[in-house]
Image 1: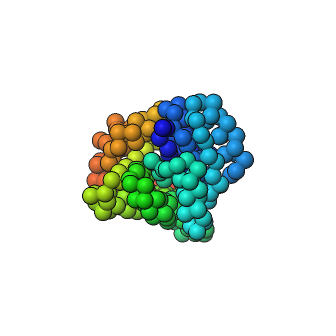
Image 2 (image 1 turned 90 degrees about the horizontal axis):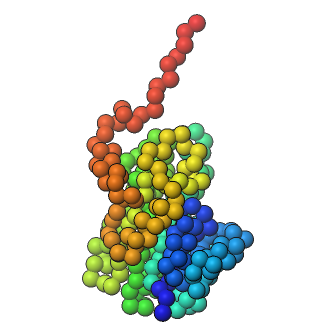
Amino acid sequence: MARTIFITGASSGIGEALAAEFARRGYDIAIAARRADLLEAQANRLRGLGANRVLPVTLDVTDFDGIAGALQRAAAELGRLDIVVVNAGVGYWLPAGKGKFDLVKRTLDTDLTGAISTIEHALPLLRAQGGGQIVGITSIAGVRGMPSLAAYSASKAGLHRYLQALRAEVYHEPIVVTELAPGYIDTDMNRGVANRPFVIPVAKGASIMARLIERKVGHRYVPAMPWSLVAPILRMLPTRFLAPTKKSSSRT
């Protein structure tokens, strides 16, 4: 019997690449995202890659009341959910106090509250079936608050702490909690960023993540090198090294 996986944010970026990677590994896959048209086309591609069953699930994770139904439908049609990958997210370049609170709220609703809501609704299903694995996708940006990425950094840091607490809470249950914190992985979300140190192709990132998920690790940076070394340096770096360059005023 094929293993099953449910992936949010599966129509693009890391989620799309992860779905392709698990299709090649023969999983039954539920792909969840907002755009039904993209999901249907993707489902056909995944079947061609080796997935036996692919279930497209239209889901906006900011529709908190709709998450439980989406998970229940996937569990019913696939038989069970061995792995739930909480990946849906948005990212915006948002200088503080510049009238962009609507996008700040959207970031927090999607990347933090939507992620936690997905996990909270998944846990009763995993418990009822006798166990499973929660995978949360955070980010190196959660290690340190970055200028103009305050909402994104805050949401990823918050999700990190939630997953950390959850791992301890379910320690004596047959539930695995995995956190993967990518550095720069080449996707549309960051392609417009001028400086992307140590960037890797999305297919490579997805391959690394799939291996770590199957190994049921607790927490890993992706890729481990150099980010396992960069992360502690980021935590200790004086603020002046992160601050934007001060614009000099011209005199007339």
